[in-house]
Length: 578
Ligand SMILES: Nc1ncnc2c1ncn2[C@@H]1O[C@H](COP(=O)(O)OP(=O)(O)OP(=O)(O)O)[C@@H](O)[C@H]1O
Ligand SMILES: [Mg+2]
Image 1 (cartoon, protein in one colour):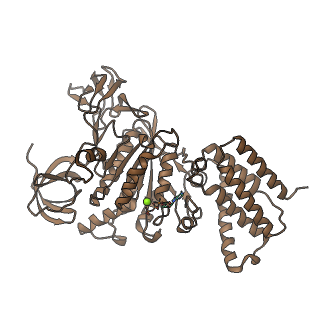
Image 2: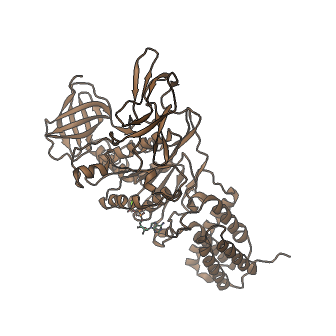
Image 3: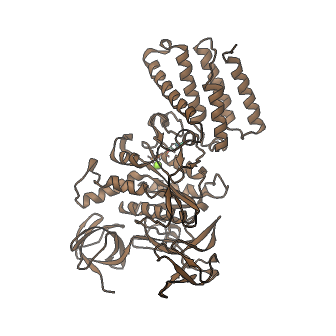
């Protein structure tokens, strides 16, 4: 192959301009040659014989006239067994392995395959000689943690290949496990791993279906009022410190999902360390095994320039799509997408593009939209279904949801879980504000009842605001009871104690039971109170009982006896019908 070497003519932070006298493709990878080091860079703009590239490493030391070697390859990631439980940096380098080899101070220009080529896996074929296969057909599987990891025909192979040979038994990732042949007898080798360019969605499926199944997160305010669908999208915007990261972690622990891919693009090193420290300790709420066994983490290390955040988002979504192809339900969490957007802004500024709103590039919206569009509930070629659900946090400066990243995101997502400063300050966790949040997906509860509850919460807030103006004496007893009902529902149902082993996760059955109980026994009932104090003390008593009820095991003796006690208390105050 001809030498494709360009020469640097301009350096502007992490963006370099390179002169080339050969064709280059958009998003092609090149390596800046710096003594012994090779620094990875990606083509982001082509202008005749000049290309602009974002360098994924510190550019210190790079000079004009330095060389860049082009690879003909797009930014890609290795896909295969060994991804689960790993922690990668923004470029897909396995961090634990790098740390073992180079210590904790990451060396610039060190790139390792995201998978360990030497690791051996027992391969169990599912096809035999002379079978016809398609891209993404299952050739066989290996066991990875608790999953059958299907080894698939590479997604970029031609259709209708015939199995020429297949080799069961132990293999490492460099050994051929199957040989396929096309009608002209051209052969194609398959391995346990394959490579895929991260910016191109994997589309080996029959069709994308409308996300209609609820994804149970076991967080009551989400599942009951603002549900998320399998294969759908949601965002969690919230001001600094309002609980976005904690909420994403809770969802990853308890949601009814097979695999979680966590992309941490927070810029503070402390946050990254926090993820690395805490995540491996967390227990999977569903299987009681370490959560990390069904998780892939991609973390931008503080040593990396902002451009690596861009790469990490795409690597994450590609890994998610890969596991989806096996018929699994995958949840991709991006925390926080604002930092990714900031990276886009920085690169755009260096490219001297015409800035859009708040100096974000004009293509911000389309980038965000095409990222969320990679979610989906799909019907695979084999008739099975798989899904990628995407949840991104947004951290708008000053908590102002009018800013471009939040606005661009809420145009495309299916559910908006807005956290509010007031709720976080009042330690009403999760701090999702029911008055500003919404979801386009269907709730599993009776939608009329849910509508009633939205209304109640709004009315309750209005009455509270009015009280601030006219004082408690200025409002009627009936209004006061409405206010108390809203407050009560918020306290015992919408708020959930993340530190209580029972209350932290409520499954669907219990949500249905408790919601309907509260609705028919309390919200929909009329009460007889002699005055406001009487009403207040009654609801306080009720609240306390409910709090204990929430921490008791569903349908246990304790649960049942508390239920009796609650019913008895309620009976005393019902308006008796004749
Ligand atoms: N569900 C919860 N239960 C109890 N405490 C919580 C909960 N959510 C958040 N907190 C408290 O709020 C703190 C900040 O939460 P978190 O780090 O998730 O905020 P954040 O919105 O991600 O912040 P940043 O904008 O800095 O990324 C936590 O350390 C914790 O003390
Ligand atoms: Mg955070």
